[in-house]
Length: 299
Ligand SMILES: NC(=O)c1ccc[n+]([C@@H]2O[C@H](COP(=O)([O-])OP(=O)(O)OC[C@H]3O[C@@H](n4cnc5c(N)ncnc54)[C@H](OP(=O)(O)O)[C@@H]3O)[C@@H](O)[C@H]2O)c1
Image (cartoon, rainbow, N blue to C red; front, side, top):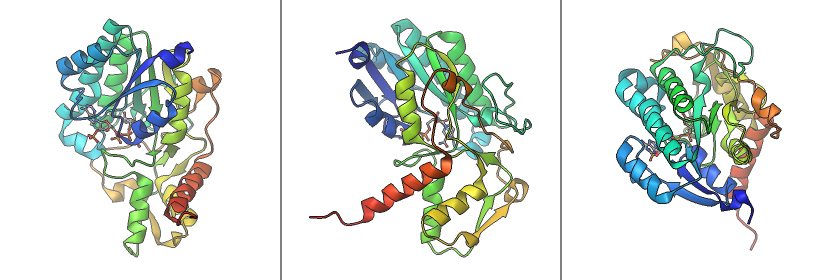
């Protein structure tokens, strides 16, 4: 058994969208999946005691309070989960000698740059959610040296996003199936839809290194949410003409979001990890896999 295979890896939020793809991506490792509410990062002492019993070499934290609009009214909750619990987790990891892997968001940027953001670019959070996630990043960096902080964007995975009910792809497919005549989608926010399966594979590779620090990890390319929705309809045989572009101001979401939050995977590339696929290719593969599962299996 090599060193990596013998390492014990605790995954917090193992049934979440990303967590569900991390478990199979780490299938040859000694994985301990942890589920809310039995394992709650906000219950700091209990979480620390549980990790002391497990004695992991690596802790992967996918937990977050990330209903972005709701965070505006529930700042205490947003900071409790996304910042203070992460600080305490980082302290626990340092005390145990464990590496921490933590996830953050493209929303830490204000969107004014108009070109892909590098890890070195200065953040400018526009919302409570973004500020709480940025605080979480700082707490990780100030409490432990042995950590990977991975900023990502627009996740879609087979488990769906538990926190939000569904991911964007599933929401669009649901609206399409419900026979809606028109679907309004924001056209002036540019992002990169990113498949959790590809992200999980790169995280699995990254934790085999000791190149700790901050990483941007998203699929290749970019699009507006409107373009993403159109692509979902095109690739799933729906009618893309029912998707209508609206600007964010007219859409009227409570939290402000960056107009442009595309991330440049600079450090990931330098670390020698395989590049992501273009987002549209991954979306096509995701939809194809879903379709194949629906077809009857040969006897
Ligand atoms: N989704 C996106 O588009 C997106 C974009 C950029 C960054 N990110 C970041 O990527 C990470 C993973 O996102 P995701 O889409 O996989 O989220 P997700 O589907 O909501 O999964 C999060 C998991 O953490 C669990 N959890 C929630 N609160 C917890 C707590 N207090 N203690 C322990 N576990 C808790 C959830 O359990 P329950 O569901 O049972 O509560 C769930 O299993 C998050 O850090 C998020 O901020 C996500």
